[in-house]
Image (cartoon, rainbow, N blue to C red; front, side, top):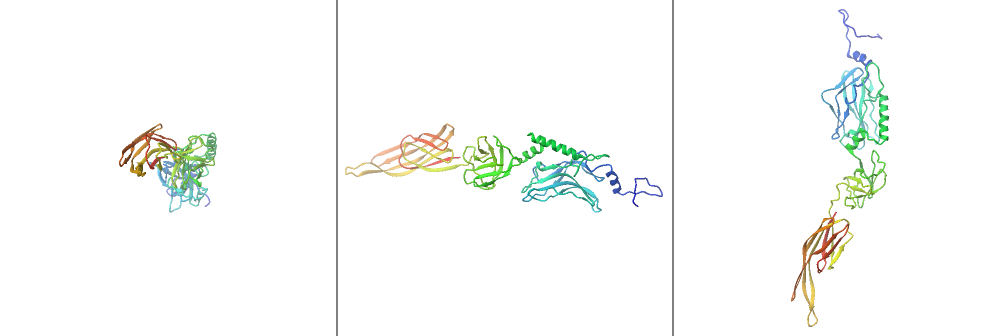
Length: 407
């Protein structure tokens, strides 16, 4: 029989029974598919601290069948990506098959790719999907970032808002909204999605290198280097000399520690660099690596320890030598020799930009027929950018070790 109608009361001799599909078909003709109200209802979000997304409370309608999340939000786990990004979809799936007969929130997993696309919706047979959101799942991470979620509730082609009697094409609303957001971005204003992404991840990228020249690509791309601009990178290889950094081909700049010494990169280290506006990137939280240079000084009253590869902060002079010194002549022309001892230490460190603290002294003794003892200290010491000037209070015998510490 090619026609039907309804719904009517029973009569004693004419019972009327109607299956659920007839009611769904009836309401499906006067209420369009989608979510009720939109806004905060059935909104997909992420905390940014785990691999889950949350579906807020709300209601939806699919082909005459009702769905709701009530009381508390629904948590949906997102499987981690492998070595490539992928795009998943959060959908409401109606399945009218006799084995299922329900609507459930479901994650449709996309295909990993260099430029991934969202998976297709199923709308055939007993299954009908509406999409609430897309989720970009980043490779090699178990965290879902809020900025990687794209709301699709207003897209009439995949979801839309529930409307009674008269169907409203919300895709036009979405188009106008997208045009407005783009105009805001073009004027240099930060949109909510941009702010969420920047707060969650900052300017982060994995660096590549050619020798000590490191580079990285950031999205959104910076258009210029300005003072205070911050970049965070995961370094792919150790540096073997003074490194440079070039973000988005804006120009390679030296990477320095806060003390202006060349920075040091270690493989798999995460480093934050801030452009100083003077042609350099400054490593944040760096500069405390202690370096040591060892050498010898002679018997000169004053001198300079020059060409240090760092800014000196401490000086230690260690003396402990034994020499045979000629202290006179015998009548027969032979020399008179005595043992000369030099021992002790002097320690100096930079207390402030113009001040140094000195402690300790060096002792010279000569023993034989003559008795001699001389105590020597540092009369002055000056810590420069890469040198130390010093002056002893008196001359000292022999060659002696020094150690310079700095960063």
